[in-house]
Image (cartoon, rainbow, N blue to C red; front, side, top):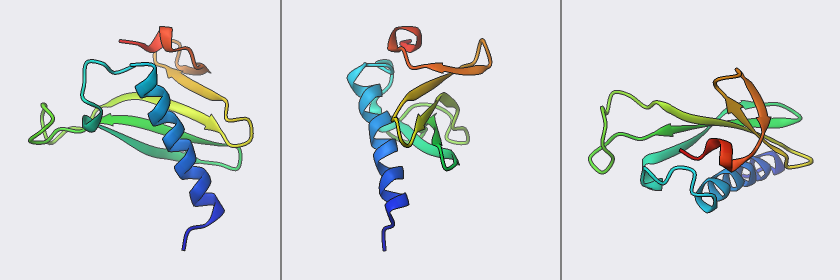
Length: 100
């Protein structure tokens, strides 16, 4: 049985997948080589990490799955934040600052 909580979680992940694809954030890697993993769930937000997949179709060491990026999406407002590793904090989503 799927709860409303699960549906909201699924929608949050889908939103992150769609913006990363539409904004061409990871043009250097096939989208099939990325995993979107929920790292934290609170009453206010979900934190989602994007990891590289390494397997027969995706190059890299299969014993590793490095994190490419981290996002936070708020449940009510759907505001998206991006983890800036340089400043060590979340900031407003801006694809121009993220695009690699």
